[in-house]
Length: 101
Image 1: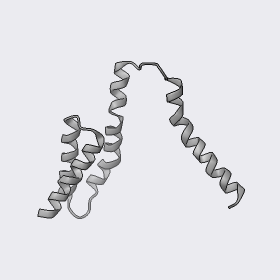
Image 2: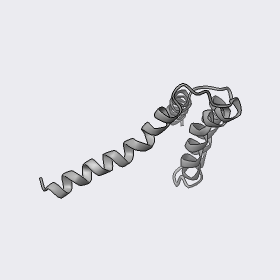
Image 3: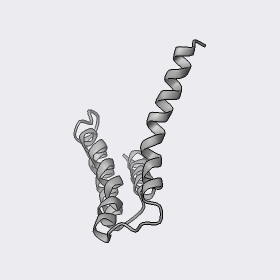
Image 4: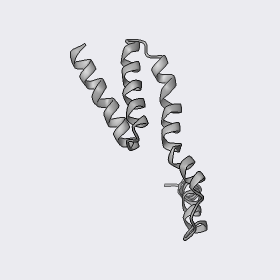
């Protein structure tokens, strides 16, 4: 392996690692305001929605498939489920839907 490629991999690793490590170092032992904690708690749901919502509208085969999956995910998220539960719940609903229809 060329040394340039090795240094590029190391550089990309550092660029990825540093932004993830800095909040732990800078905010160690500090409590964020409750308002900011509430906002940060909802970031995964907002990101998941922004990534998936365009795909729901552009399904070529069956629009209902996307709408049922989105409804299941929305209901689970509205009830306060964890992000992984939202995803697994939506997958389960779509599996049942595709089995019967």
